[in-house]
Length: 444
Image (tube, rainbow, N blue to C red):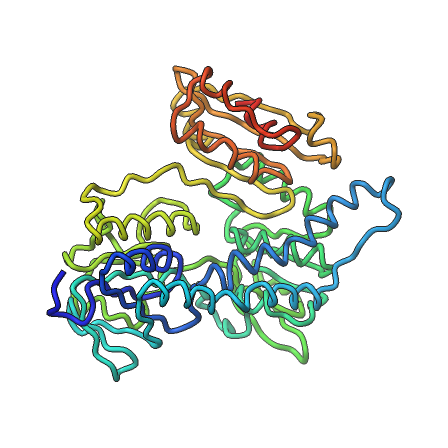
């Protein structure tokens, strides 16, 4: 590194793609700067994962207690206002804690919006000019908004998680992660929910027979799904809103959530000015997370790749760049197995090779009906199943599970998939009993 610039490494964005690596990088003596226009921590701690899972916790409890209603004396209901207040109690301290982590490590935080002036220079809020030898684009994703009349009448995921009072009726446009998770939460809290799909499939990245079970369960609970909705406009009428869709059809609702996806957060960054290659999928990088401009890198959800857009991937990339910039490695990034989960009720979690790809490749796919397995019957789970993929040598190379405990079961199996453990090695792993992890290993 050289003192020619203000910083050795300058990060734009302060989410997981930054702070997990920037703080330890600064401790090695590298001069680190972090520019953030919003809350330190980015999406996940402040308006994503942490907030969502807090809002979902009462949903999980109400599902379980409903199944055990012949044992428990009363069934709980969700106090929405208290739930949102509890969510805020959880996430409010996080930016300060992450700020302390960065600053205690020696990094400098600059608040504002950065725009590239040249490959080594950014301008913050049109006022402060900052130079760096290396710059990391880690600006993440932002909510996509439908380009239709009245689009400003709809709300995004942050608005939903900050609702002080839950509307009686909600229309959700989109059936990806956000749409399906928030449909689950809103329905459990008492709202009348309608989900409008762009096509005819929800959660396209997940195993569709399992997705169909989630959709059927939500339908039985009162959620309405409209396939191939072709949403055309939003209008306001008195205190309500109308969604125009289909063939001159309209639906009246109290609140609209635009959950049509998330797109790269690159507005005003000035990438065209410096020639960084990007498109609607994100920023393109090589196997060292380096863009086509040699001193500029990118990490996290802003990348144009096929990996799940999840926090653990951003964490891994941030740690990799820390090792690369501190001289601990010069090797290309070598991604581990990255699992993903949708926090519906039940959950669907997956890791490694997906079922359609495995079937196409002719690998062994085993079916496990878990609803009758004693551990899942402890809480009377009605929907529980998994499919496991084994290669020609018997190694576990993929798993997909649907259950209320799917994320924990898949987490337990990650070492077997990542390290290609054989049967003898798996048999030496004795987990705590009785736990879902032990049950998952027993099936591996």
